[in-house]
Image (cartoon, rainbow, N blue to C red; front, side, top):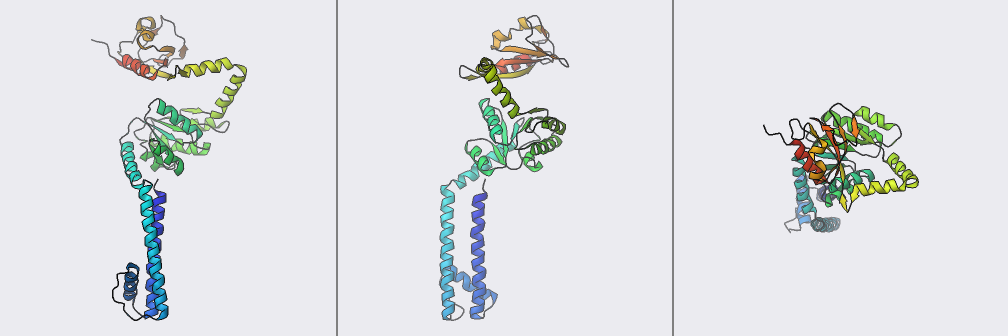
Length: 338
């Protein structure tokens, strides 16, 4: 984030050092003096303090002194302009904000790391913001990373394939990683690195080339998705079955409120464990729709009947508002009274 100000700082330092070296060498030649005397003449000339000269200057020496003075004034003026520009551009504010962000990132636990903030990554970020998901973005394009930082998104500017960058993003404490970089090779390398650092990590990866999904899964991805294929299927449905797509849009966003699919696990010894769906009263208590149930080690059963039981450890796939899904998670984890 601070590369541009640091680069300008190095330019100023280089100009100052170069002027001192040129002045020192020049005065040594013009006055037949030592290095210390040449440096002394250069410093008092640049600073314009008016101390005594070590020797009388020839016309050439006076012209050289004028050059040193003007160059020194030019560098000082340039330095002042850069300092004012740095303050006006919010450089100091940006430094403090960056430090606060780094501290916040270091304290995060059970978050999700989004690698890449391109078109696909931006959609992921937007969804996470809507659902108030805790996440960190790793983006190697400085301009894009700065945009995200200005928007209040936690972001690290760096290469997601780099182990140190992932550690900085809290990969050891994270619960998931979404890899949506520009090509499959980068995604594969990121997955391999992430899986090596955190074997328990849940990884979802973007598949770009046809047939790359298998490679990504071999590298360690739990799930893969191809935006191109999904986009193609959606376009075909819009042409062949437009009403189906319209219904799906309504399901995802109903009455200007976000609906989402959620997975809720019935904890062992919970109130819901072993209870029939009709007796659990989930729709009445939460307003959620039970789409499917999966028993531990069993297959996913869609549209379960009212007389079907909720075995201990089973997972329910439900549809509804995010806060209601959290409510059901609390209910499904509430222990039976003994």
